[in-house]
Image (cartoon, rainbow, N blue to C red; front, side):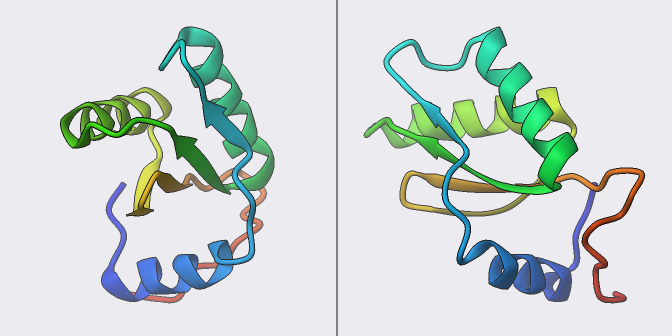
Amino acid sequence: MNLTKKQKQYLKGLAHSLKPVVLLGQNGLTEGVIAEIDNSLNIHELIKVKVATDDRDTKRLIIDAIVRETNAAEVTTIGHTLVLYRPTEDKKIVLPKK
């Protein structure tokens, strides 16, 4: 899924007040964490995920794996917080046109 710059800015504004719904702990990225992220995306469409690792390369690999496994779009990553978006059939969030 590709988002335009305008759509990403809109989603960043919506995500600003959100709290992380999934926190990656010491066990890292497990099937249970992926399932929880997938479930949260089905409910909310736009979520924050906290990736607690100090190594940039490891964090990038984890983020890429989450995006690949959930078929979500990476809106932005700020510090340890990843913002993900995936539309549902209900279309709770209406994106601006391209």
